[in-house]
Image (cartoon, rainbow over all chains, first blue to last red; front, side):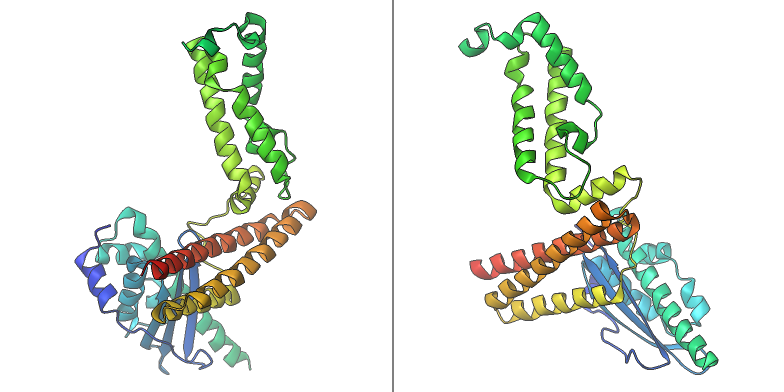
Amino acid sequence: MAYSDKVLDHYENPRNVGSLDKNDPHVGTGMVGAPACGDVMKLQIKVNDSGIIEDAKFKTYGCGSAIASSSLVTEWLKGKSLDEAAQIKNSAIAEELALPPVKIHCSVLAEDAIKAAVADLKSKQSDKEVA
Amino acid sequence: MSAAAAKASPFESAPLLRSRRLWIDSLMHKNHFELFGLPERFAIDLQALDQLYRKIQGEVHPDRFAAGSSAERLKSMQLATAANEAYQTLKNPTSRARHLLQLKGVETEEDSNTAMPADFLMLQMEWREAIEEAVAASDIDALDELLSETRKTTRQLQQQLHAQLDEADATLAAAETVRKLSFIDKVQADIGHAISKLQDA
């Protein structure tokens, strides 16, 4: 399959690969998987005290489009609030990377990973408030 | 026409051809289990499935319909295709469970459902990392070991499916088990590719 230049760029030079401390109360971790293709994606975000995402890391096992989708969203996430982050849509990812229809599910995976990471962080923060 | 087909076969006499036609009609639009007359269960007698499949393929062989109309020949061909699809679906445990769930009105959502238990996804990550490391070290033994580990998980999940589908009616839990198996099928295929690549190198 012919990948777009942007997919190739992210695939060959992925941004923000790595891990953050998942036990850090400022870190939210989202893990999702795509059963049909066996892709696994871990996305982590770290917020500062004013609730702005200051760091994002990912680790993805999957095709070039899945890696590019997660690499791209780590760039987009930095500087956003949690609510802004949760509004990132897979269609925007697919459009930016010019994903073909058969690879749309890779962008869905990235959107779901963001939502899972935000939900993890929010549940950590509400636990803290209760405590 | 070949000599064998030209010889008056008992199947080609009009009444018998008619009964065969009715038999084929009765099997059209059946689900995969009904087609073979097997109970709609996850646990299956694979030997019986093999025999029933061969029996149907023999009954709908084109030679038997040499004297039939083109519509009859078409129907026999459709049944042969349906039997083949049903056989392939039921033989494989993952697709058998998927079909069973569809009959119960539950989709397995392997294309759209990305939420999996965290420990299962962690295990997937670990397996993927282990594959990468083994490939980098050209370690075929490590890949073989990983393959048997994944097969152990496959067997456990298949036992779960039996409990979820045959002993209980836990369809949503079974759908998740199918998604897990679908994951592992892919991992096993990838390990297989990695092994043959290293062997060829």
